Image 1 (tube, rainbow, N blue to C red):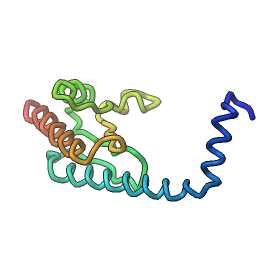
Image 2 (image 1 turned 135 degrees about the horizontal axis):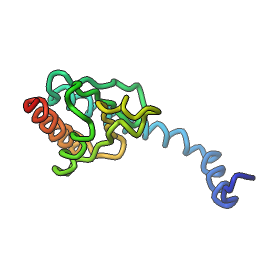
Image 3 (image 1 turned 90 degrees about the vertical axis):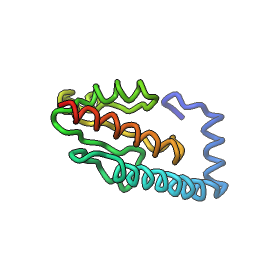
Image 4 (image 1 turned 45 degrees about the horizontal axis):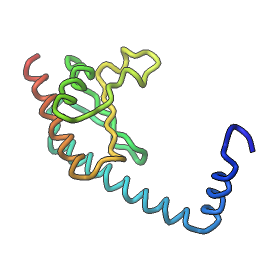
Length: 134
């Protein structure tokens, strides 16, 4: 033991892993995250305006959007939040924050499929509004 791990909890996790339940659980999570990712990608393809690009992750929890050069991620973040949609502006994820000024990180891992679609639709409307005013 070391590093501050709780010995009792460590034993519980070890027992769980030995029980054979770990692999089926991981498979269920992979299926769930794949479905949510696919829903996000489909919604992006359906709603996002021209000029917005996004990653197509093979796994993980996020899709990254690249906004047109004249649209700032912080502004999109602020306006989307006013409509109940929370996204992460890219500046906090870069060693040089200015490199993330036109990037958004969208999390699909914790949202329901309907919330994913609704959120992306609202986000697309916000982005389209900013594109139209520039």
